[in-house]
Length: 260
Ligand code: 3PY
Ligand code: MG
View 1 (cartoon, rainbow, N blue to C red):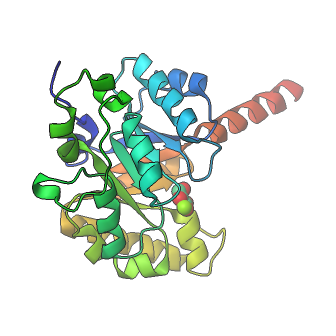
View 2: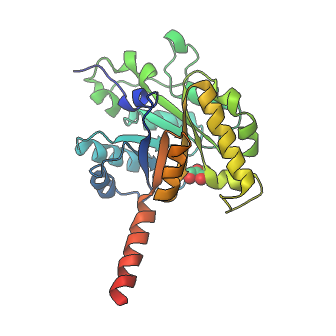
View 3: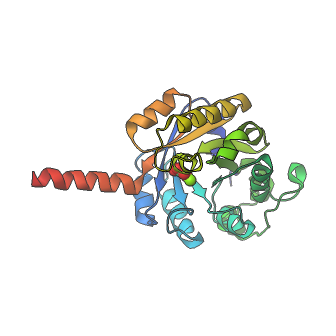
């Protein structure tokens, strides 16, 4: 069997912008269908959508079944060892951690994704052989290659995290600083006002910190115009809203047009 690799980890370090979509429906069918839409990545959300580890496993299988290059990303709801183990064992190769506020928290997130040993002596990932990630024990190179192939994306979404952005970006093993604009706006005292100048200044500060560290900056865009704007500003990992958002926008518009 071929060496275990994570193409998205490689692509995160290349200059092209990578466009993804949030999967919030908790549906294998939606995940499988959307893998045919051509996104570079699809994010299975465990923080704000009804996905537990069984649901995540189903959606990882569904995305793989499309045999297309959309790479799954899983946003875990917390920096919990048991949760991270399950998601990695299920076959996720790229994880997003919400609300990382310091270099120490970022380093802890990376440790959760790493088996102890080698360069990752302080890794906290538990070892099990017969898991989906390792083709249930048939992929014999998994243990040796997993540490180097897991990608870690951390979310910057508080005033404190913005202040710490340079130190967080410098933590070895962090592949991307991803801004959560809704939580960031709230933390800065502008709940719901993502366009407020304070929020935009914080966004620019985080993008610059990622650039200084030579890693990707990521952003959630709620529409095409915003996605294009962030791409022009140098963001390289851009979410083009969410399945649920497009479904409701398109269906409401169709209904309005039909009735007009
Ligand atoms: C946020 O906006 O807070 C996110 O986490 C991503 O949309
Ligand atoms: Mg958030």
